[in-house]
Length: 85
Image (cartoon, rainbow, N blue to C red):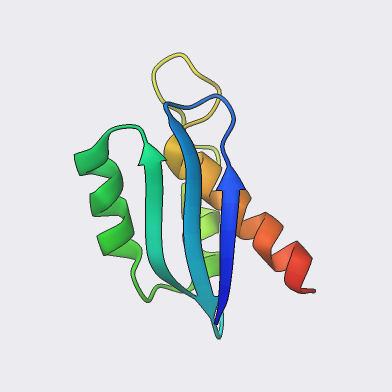
């Protein structure tokens, strides 16, 4: 299992941390942001295929912002896979 931290850009959350094991997401935690919604994202994605989750979340926006916490999670997953490659 590898642990990853990602500093977000353009969102209320400041950082996302999560673990990857065999391509699956675990222990997703957002620092800052809408606590209830982000906690729910972490619960819903626990054990999910990371690449599939990133593909679904990529491009999601929040209000008039060009990104969202979910989009930032997709970027964090992409970065984690690039580091592990």
